[in-house]
Image (cartoon, rainbow, N blue to C red; front, side):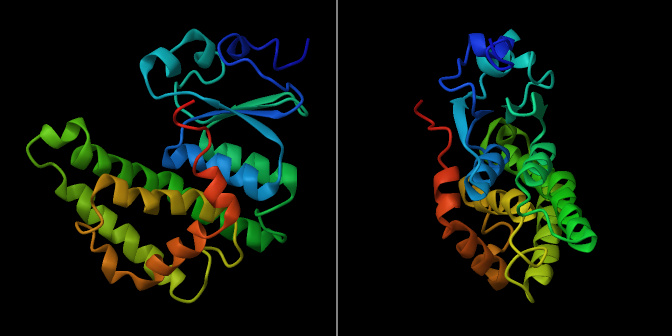
Length: 227
């Protein structure tokens, strides 16, 4: 028996190859951060589709891995580490692989800074804007202006940062893997016009560069939504 096969989550999402890192996820912006990073870093992994339904994320098996009932989560058999929270996973994978996390203390600090920008600002604000624009919150009489204003402010911060560089912290890094999927999600949420996306040429070019990366194209579809 291995660390993975002994874990309760293996009862619901059994590992075909317990020697590989196991990814439990769904292709949301937070989910694809990790699949993209795994592809970019060349770390062998096995993906498992965990839907956003309560029957999956609130199952006893998934809660044994992430008591906060959110995707993504991983188990690494090499280190016997089970981990949730997408930002924490990116930092772990970057350290494990020695890639995309910076090579000097200054580079590492700048990349972490922008990763935290995504975790604390971009993701929560755009996620709430999407909820109130596309999902159940759209039925509430317009509470969205706060999120629209904050979304525009965040885009302006990114536009200024990317006006003089190709990637958010200089070299391509885990910060880009965290930020760009949320920019891509603005189209899915139907809020690009609301936020004035077309007025941000640096961001438009940035997202195109990101989406052109072969590993990104693979990671965006992991796990397969259709199982």
